[in-house]
Image (tube, rainbow, N blue to C red; front, side):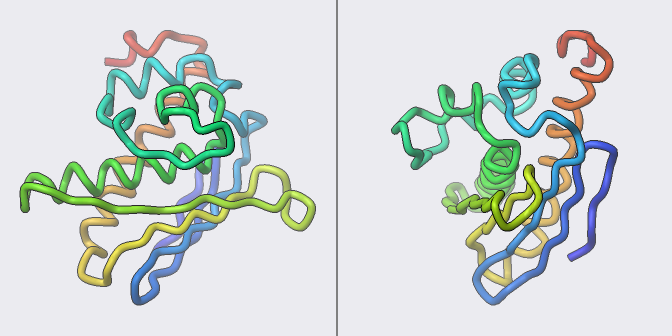
Amino acid sequence: MNQYKSANFAIDGCFGKDRIVLTQTILSPAIYTGQIPATMEVLLARIPTIFDNECTNYHRHSFYNESKNTEIGHLLEHLILENMKLVKTLKCGKADYSGVTVWDWEKDKKGTYTITIYAKQSDRELFNKAFNKSVLVLEEIYSTQRAGIAPALLS
């Protein structure tokens, strides 16, 4: 997998037999969605079906509630999973993917996440499409913070 880097975050990844492991490092001061007020508006405008994702989290929140103030790496995980599902559903009628995001800020730099997406080798092309779409959404979220503009103005 290729690397991705912007002013906001960097991502390295590798494909395994049944998973893709990404390391995302946030380069922006905002490492939680709650630090970027337009997050929810961008998600509702660009990928509202993300809120239907099942999410296992400490507080047992729905993904809608969790996404109001979750780690950026966790959001990226769900963006990729939802984009993979949407693309695959167009081809096959149904799809289901899972993933997990972990971090250890005692060991790694604060804002570093390890994201594992469980998918077969045959899904690599699908993953690449979903990854690219997901990065665009995440970059749009960050751009609203820098520009100080409402997401509706980005349409």
